[in-house]
Amino acid sequence: MRKAIFVLSLVFTAAFALTGCKKEAEVSSDEIVVGHFASITGPTATFGQSADAGIRLAVEEINAAGGVNGKKITIITEDDQSKTEDATKAVQKLINRDKVVALLGEVASSRSKAGGPIAQQNKIPMITPASTNEEVTKIGDYIFRICFIDPFQGEALAQFAFKTLSAKRAAILLDSKQDYSVGLADKFRETFRANGGSIVSEQAYTSGDKDFRAALTSIRSSNPDVIFIPGYYNEVSLIVRQARELGLNVPLLGGDGWDSPELTKGAETEFNGTYFSNHLSTEDPDPVVQDFMKKYRAKYKSEPDAMAALGYDAALILADAMKRAGGTESQKLRDAIAATKDFNGVTGKISINADRNAQKPLTILQIVDGKYRFAQRIGADGAPLTEFKPITSDTPKK
Image 1: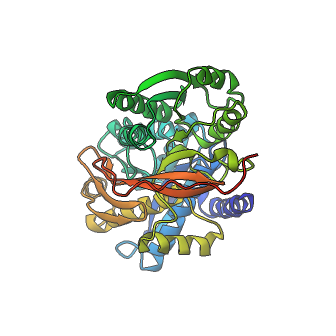
Image 2 (image 1 turned 135 degrees about the horizontal axis):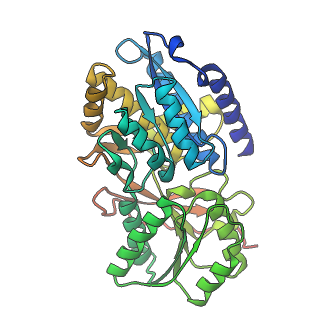
Image 3 (image 1 turned 180 degrees about the horizontal axis):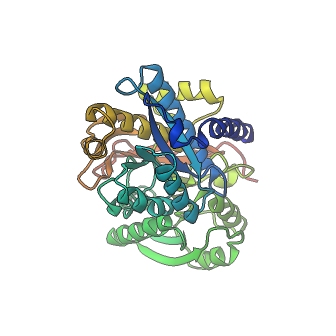
């Protein structure tokens, strides 16, 4: 996938050259300026790149169809370099310099929590495509999300581990510096124990770590049936490799932070026997999903991931709210986003509840020889919508 990422990087570079330095004086009365703050570079760059690609595809379609209330949308993307402190600066620039009427972003919960208060203070509606930490939308009534939240995700994964995989002893390896990871671990722990399971070991690491062998060795001695790793793809990629090297061949579980084309590269078979929750399965026969995939492939010559689909949905929901609001006046736009019901998105039918969170389904994916295969769909009420479909690899183990 290096070629695909390089292609997207060229697109982003061109987009920044055209829109990244737009000043207030250059804003036309015939355009609607929307900001996107994202990790275009840095350790979690694929998150921001994919979300931006999905957003730009949606905006291209919206504008081709006549725009919103006769006006075209212009997206200005500010790179926060995967840094929390830079997310704050990015939002300040987009609001104060570029005079955006709304914000899309961030993917990472910690960075949404950094930028959100500024949006709230300025009464700029903000929609995060993928920040799942429960606290994000509690920032204020101008902050929304179109993804499911960590309590739902953590509970679904714990139920899947206990009931579907028949695990009774679980270990947790979490990133202690990421709100996303801590929140997922909390709900998984609570739910797994409530089902009658035991947490036999709990270890922590910090973003940027490279060697996880000490923690994994401690986990191995506890003899778990399953290991829950609610981290981001860059560390998870190393953790899984090192776990298999140490003979930890039990199922490994994670959340949507695993989703990246970089996750399994060079270790495809080591990831066999791993599962993660996500917002999208490319195997979904839904015409909405397949149409999105066709358009994305045609534009970017690469496969979309869930972050791309969430970015796409976020932009479409914002545009739909602008149409229903009759413009971009702050309060009216906020109210229109809050009133979103049964929006038929690529990542599922989306309704925004009273807490400004999305009610929608969740998908469990199984990794088989480096490919993300559909395993099960969980409804917004936590009940399985489909039967579990385990897939066995035909590739000999290394």
